[in-house]
Length: 383
Image (tube, rainbow, N blue to C red; front, side):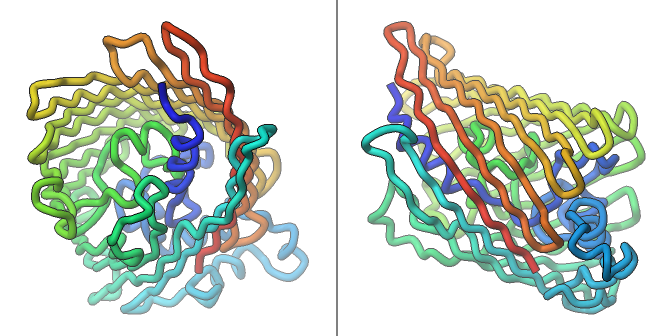
């Protein structure tokens, strides 16, 4: 049986992402992450176009509408809300804090504020265009709640890599970056992120090739793990992903990853769907399987399912409903179900507010656990 409170708390620690451009925005007809991000599979700093989209299409404009046009909002979507310039260096900064209250309705309820992320970095463009660039981001990471005695530094490089776009179809990237696999959602507390070890602290030194055209996005990535880790625990391997556009509002994708270290080898498969269902609204789904084989000879096969809708209520304001299913071992009748609503609001460019309530339940062949309720309130600021 799982310690549900510990699982919920640990998961929330990883609820972080760099910017306000999420894969849910296929509802705005943004299919490819390369449209708004320097990383072709999302996450990390936004391009000038991505900043303009965040300022004009995503964020609420009722506070600025009496004073600024969309064109003027776009012009001041640069660093520190300054004018966008074709500079050699484009700095960026992010902060995300979380108010977490576990055990809602219980005598043992606990509340705390967590500084989840504080990053500074820059995109360096030696040719003043986005065909050749370098990305660096250094940030704060809290000590894991399940390893309070860790001597690992709370400050680390989130990513540092060089990107080169040969042309509009082909790109090559080298350095420390996220692994390409599945939906790169901002919900790092989801099973599809934590159990696959694809949270914001699981980047790897790697080589990535990316191909894109009107219908496809394809990525193949060879990685040798995070070189800051000890050799025996550092996983190396290869991963790949393909996404296909049925039309400008519907995308199908599949991923495969295999990696190993001194203690185990792991192979993961996933299939996913992103679908716009109305202007600004979307649904996403990911089904994945994880096969893990330890050097002792023991093997474990697990399955997860992620479902989420993202509904536009008014400009800048969204409702979210997430359902997740996780079966830790295919040979054991035990599963975990998580479901919860959320409200997400972008009052103006550079600010995201989000409030989530989660119900977590573990079910086995022997008994059912009591429901565990958790509240998470987030503040996300970026410059």
